[in-house]
Amino acid sequence: MSIHEQSAPARTAGASTPVTGTEEPVMHGYEHALAQSRMREMREEAMAASRAHRLYRARRAARRAERAVRRAARLSASVH
Image (tube, rainbow, N blue to C red; front, side, top):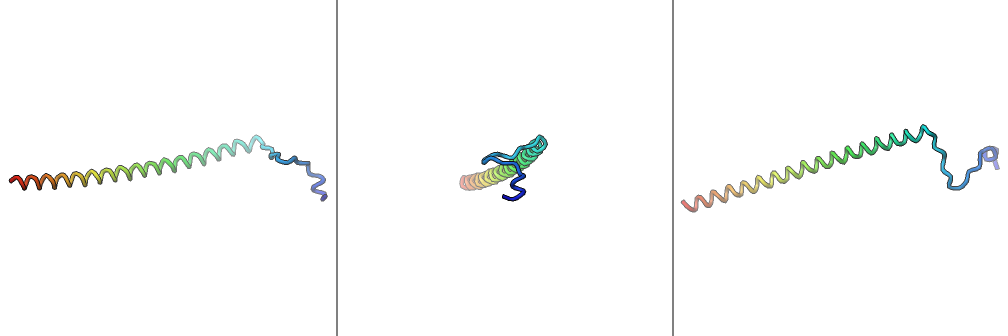
């Protein structure tokens, strides 16, 4: 046994290191900042997906309207 091992306090297996009162709030603040950052990223992703979906739907509606106009023009031409 070395001199350092003799002078060090004995630790039991599975014992956690003690947390001081100053470390815990810092950790919670850090975790809170990470959670806020992740939520902001997720919100931005959701907004981008929503915009992409709205754009897809708008283009689809425009194509349907164009087809309807062409169909109406063909019907009108065939009647006259």
